[in-house]
Length: 391
Ligand code: HEC
Image 1 (tube, rainbow, N blue to C red):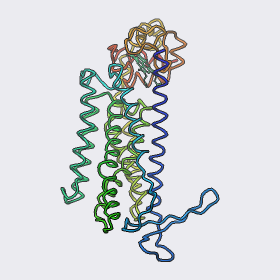
Image 2: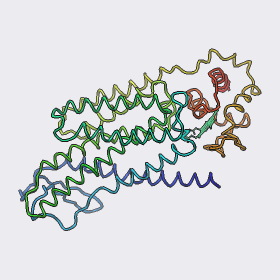
Image 3: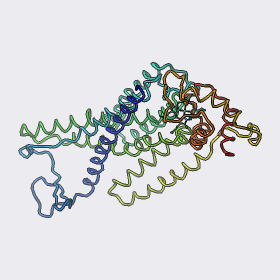
Image 4: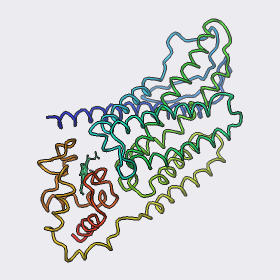
């Protein structure tokens, strides 16, 4: 019963997170497109900086871009803030549900740092909140005058975080935590820096004053940052399906290349300067570099394994029993995983063969046994993997 309930809680959270995220990113892409598509109005009109015509569902739509101006505030103004908020709330609950409960086993890597569940939770929450203050300070209006210095500091912080997180937590935990950190910066940008600025300008206009337009430029900076975060965050969310990436020896380099390439792709999508399309070249080189970096895997050396021809299932079975069945049997003894996760039961040779490809990937990349709680040795990994590969 508990496992069925667990399953549904996770499913509902993931589904809501996905739907909210699609709405957020959808509206964000739409505004990026709108902003780059405005043309000067065909007939000049007061306070209209640009207009765009679209066709959809059998109608034409006309959108004007106007400055917030006294006496011209529409009665009903639609704000875009709940998509972001709901994406964060559902995402954070999903993260906490999967990575904080059950002893935080998905987050901790005892071989890197033997944190307790509460230490892991405390540290990760501290890093999420702390990152906002660091980032907000780096980009605090007029604090650092040169934009290039702020960009440089942000990159240093990002690289440092990715490296640090992958040293402290499990690969998978480090990746998702980096995603949570960036998602949180995006949400806080909306609530702390963008919305209050807009509200202030509206208030001034409603009071009959011409608002201070420099506020909108400051909000715009954070809005632009959010668009740079989109692809890296999406990469991270999907990377969870690829143990070969987050479980890789150089997972931190892979994540940095993925994120920087994603940000470059975003830049060429948005820039009005067509010459800057050359940035797609380093992005493509980055993607190719990923293939090379991920190919250099100091994997478990199968050389130390006995010749697979001399191995039989009876021997492999003893390894699986000792290292996997605590969580992957019909009668689990693990206190957190009472039912075999993902329906992967490994009690018979047929079951092992059924999950052959997944098992090879998980064991070779040291993702399973989870947090190596059952202390599987490299020799045993080599035996299991080489036996499976001959099958
Ligand atoms: C302490 C518990 C634990 C132990 C021990 C353990 N696993 Fe797992 N295993 C898990 C959990 C939890 C998941 C689900 C992870 C997730 O949500 O993606 C999982 C998932 C898997 C999957 C499915 C992966 C996927 O992407 O669908 C495979 C295959 C697997 N384990 C193989 C193994 C093998 C082989 C061993 C032994 C060498 C092992 N596990 C030991 C807890 C464990």
